[in-house]
Amino acid sequence: MNVLIKTSGFIVALFSMHLLSGCAHYEVNTGRGNIPGIYIRSEMQEADRAVEAARQAGKDKACPAAFKAAEDAKNNAYDVFRACHTEEGVALAKVATAKANALCPPPAAVKEESPSEAEAPLAPLPPTEPMPERMKYCVSLHIEFDINKADIRPEYHDEVAKVGDFMKKNPTTTALIEGYTDEVGSDEYNMRLSQQRAESVVKYLEEHFGIDSARLAAVGYGKTRPIADNSTDAGRQKNRRINAIIDCALDVKGLAQPPERLCLSLNVEYATDSAEINPRYYDEVNTVGEYMRKYPTTTAAIEGHTDNVGGYEHNMKLSQRRAENVVNYLVEKFGIERSRLSAKGYGSSRRIAYNNTPEGRQKNRRINAIIDCVLAK
View 1 (cartoon, rainbow, N blue to C red):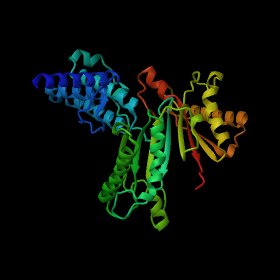
View 2 (view 1 turned 30 degrees about the horizontal axis):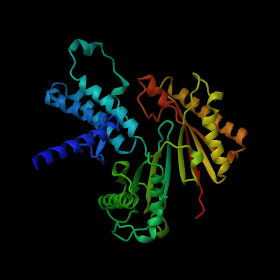
View 3 (view 1 turned 60 degrees about the vertical axis):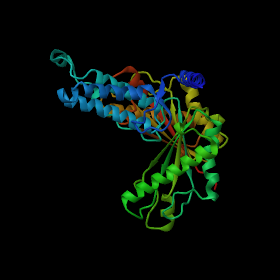
View 4 (view 1 turned 120 degrees about the vertical axis):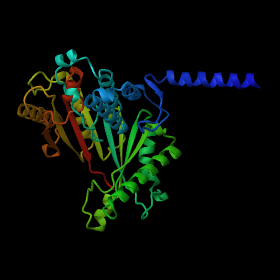
């Protein structure tokens, strides 16, 4: 019997190692970062271990300000990762690990160092901000809940199926389920209720569509983000909603029907101080033109973003010109009515990476296309 138990244990261990070997850079999730799932990217927990090792070495007392910066960087990395921005969270975790490992350097080394932008906090990405070469497929689920209840009524199962069917068909996708309420009730009550409702949708997706929990996250926003007037019954009903923000790397041509909102990050590089679209990036912009021509009810906001090289006003004007050139290209090549398009330059005000590395600056130099569709109900 003992031999059988030992043999079984060896087989289970060997199988587990095989599973992990197929998921490079993943390890067993300790749950310390409140991230769902059995496994997690190893870089996240490496940052956690680096900060704890520094604490054990007494560096939280030897250089408290620098230690707090490293700990805050680690916590911020988990916040971004928890919001389903995997690669950005991993990048921030690497920065946090480096900061923790470099704590309390000798005095001479401190004098030689100059302030780095990496020490500035990086705000979490808004949920709809697409990462480079990926898209955000955003769906509002028209689910009505009973008063003080978080259970999904049977007549709304088809709404949840919009997300379940899509994620089942596209197994590389992840989703953030957002819950919202109207303003009736206290702030604390509504935050708790909206979280429970978002978690109900996550649970339903796991149980009825077999979506792995590691691919899903739930967050409740309570009454903090109304989209309609809470003084009317109709407005309050609109505010009691569930949003699903699905992150994926797909060809938009494969979408059978347009979602309510599709957010694309276009891989377009510009020459220094130039707003002209290099012909080799036409195919990137063409994806927007082809999509909008296929779905004539869509409108698009073209956003231009830059890194921090150059002055604030210069970058604002440059990003605006780049966005306008994309709009002009879509009008001239695809015949998209100009009334369906808008251009907005944000300069370096909405960075998604640190600007102290070439790779980070490249991520920040981007064009986003935020496409809205008026769907027939």
